[in-house]
Image (cartoon, rainbow, N blue to C red; front, side, top):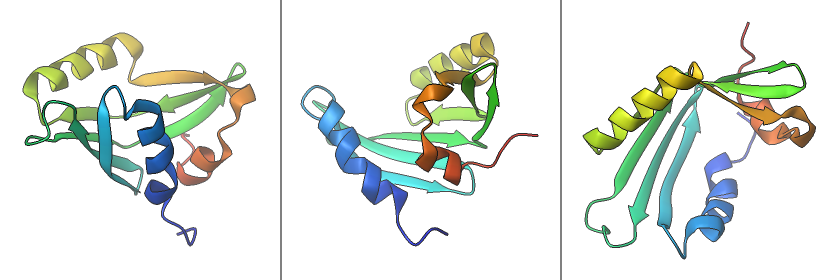
Length: 113
C-alpha cells in the first residue's frame, strides 16, 4: 500500500523497548485494519504468544486520538479473557493525546465515521 512494510519498520523499535525484559516480537503484520503479533516471551520461547487485534480505526475527539478496535485475542485463553474485560471497561478504545500525532499510524488506519 505505501511501498514499505510497517512491521519491519516498527519491530526493531518495539524489540528495543521490551526485549531485555519481556522478549522479542517476531511477527508484526498490519493489514486491512487488523494487527497480528507473535511474541517470543522470555522463559516461554517454545510457545510464542500470538495476539490479534481486529478492526482497528481512529477518530480525533476532544484533542485526543482515540484508537478503536473490535476484538483482541491471544493464544492464551486467560489473556484473551483479560483483554475482553479491559475492552468492556474502555468501550473498546484507548486514547492518545493528539499532540503526539502518530502520523504513520494515522496513515495506516481507516478513519472511523
